[in-house]
Image (cartoon, rainbow, N blue to C red; front, side):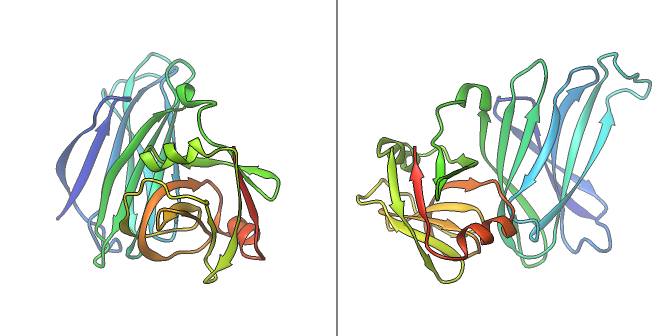
Length: 246
């Protein structure tokens, strides 16, 4: 039997978690982790899962109704359960987009870690109301084209906003990143992490790094570009670029 971490959310309120027991499948290799979200028929929110590095963890979804005699379009409540299975050791970010025609649209962001035995652990990073945040986030432009970014909520990002508009000439380095000087130092909260493609970090307090590959070092997280690895390699892996933050 394997132990499964279940974190339940009912909107923007603080999360609560509990440990439950589940039979581990033969090919899973390690303990799975689950996220459970409440919804209902006839207008309840739906959920879309975005994994930064799909080579580290996979997921499956299922729906469990609160009552066995539910009927469509009657407001019957159900849980949308997302089960994560480790593929290889590493760390990545997961965003669960909560979208509803009648309620707040939320982005739930998590850090997912898979250890050497393929046990999966989930850590909540943030819950963002995208309706309230519209127009407040920085815009990232690379070589003249705008790209979608999920920015962290920390003092480094707030300080970076104060520098905008800002143009940085980037340079390829190591075959996995583009790095450029910000011209001044920002507040930093470095931690030893393994980055994935699309991650944006602060290095040494005064350099911004955008990854199209992976590296392990002490960085402060700034954000994540919502693109595939192939798209990022094509964009960032063929020569130096220029980025603009607005």
